[in-house]
Image 1 (cartoon, rainbow, N blue to C red):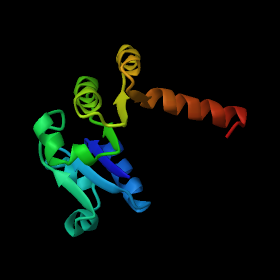
Image 2 (cartoon, rainbow, N blue to C red):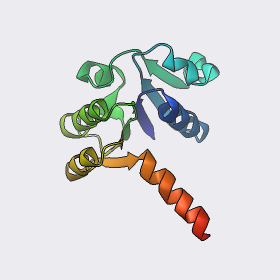
Image 3 (tube, rainbow, N blue to C red):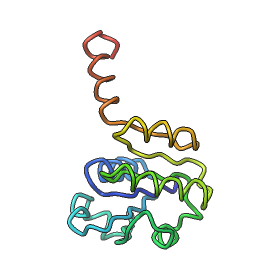
Length: 138
């Protein structure tokens, strides 16, 4: 799969590393040069993982990242509004088949779900996992 990830923080860099491990083509869009340090340097230097140093919510950054060839677009910055903007642009303007965004606010989650954008909420995932562990449904 050809995957574009916006945001190279904890979630974005972890996703990039794990998806790269299983052979997917990864492009990360991140405007903060410090955040890029979380990505595996060897993969970036060798070209296995591509990094675009721009604001990932812009069409120009998405075009530079090759969005027309993307199978999956994941918005994983620390800001719901930026994630939502980027995800909507990927889904509506660039017609990426699978668009996922990380959200913290339940209201945002409802809105993005209604637009056909899959959402992930870190707090919900953590609490679901904890309940599963406590009830033995692991």
